[in-house]
Amino acid sequence: MAKPVSESRWRQQSTAVLAAIAAAVLVVVLVGGMALGYAIEKNRVKSSTKTTKTTKKKSPTKVAGPAVLTKGTVDAISATGITIAPAKGPKQNVAITKATQIVQVASATAADIKAKSRVLYVGKGSYTDASAIIVLPGTAKIGDMVAAADASTMNIGSAAKSAKITITGASVEKATVATRSAIAKGAKVVVAATRRGGGLIATEILVLPNNSPFA
Image (tube, rainbow, N blue to C red; front, side, top):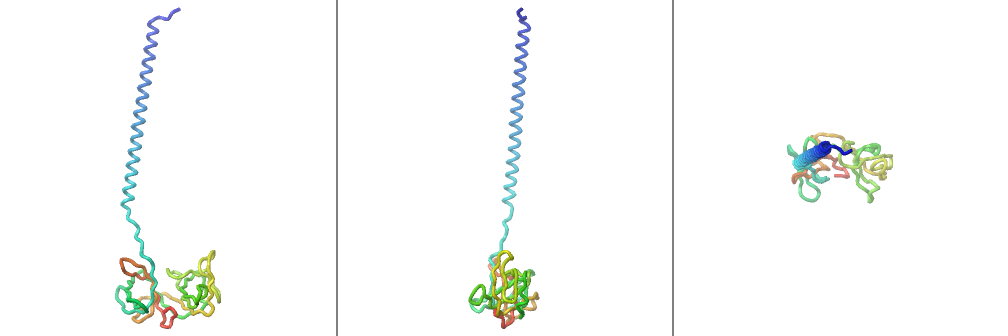
């Protein structure tokens, strides 16, 4: 039996309406997705720009100049530092700050060379044979760390990697913490300093006996 024409038309109209609704929903979804994507991308760009600006505003770290180790005789003393007259070359002005560590050196023995102390030493014709040694406080920023020591040798470096130095017959001195009053005109000193702003700032000053091998 043939279907009524009105029923056929109704179904065609219903299909068209459903198709139109589906198309409208798809457009809404697509537009909404594009808007969401644009918002996310816009936010990402803003975040990236903000991070870049923050990074640009960050000040660079200031690094002090290279360390300088010098020795000589104290030629003058002021409220802010000392003037050193080396054996050769021009006089040098060295600033002293609250952070400058001052030590006074005196005669000692090989028994004062112990693990975890730091030492300055000079070789006797060889890097591995010391002729003179100064034992520094463990807080010193200069010198070499002692990993182990006995009556005739000291190991410089770490327990995992060290060099054995012969100390038999070496002159040994030891530094103890002192104050600025230990620095007198005419005193022999070894100074560790850093260069900053065209000048020298002392990190450590070793006040030596006049007969020190390091003088």
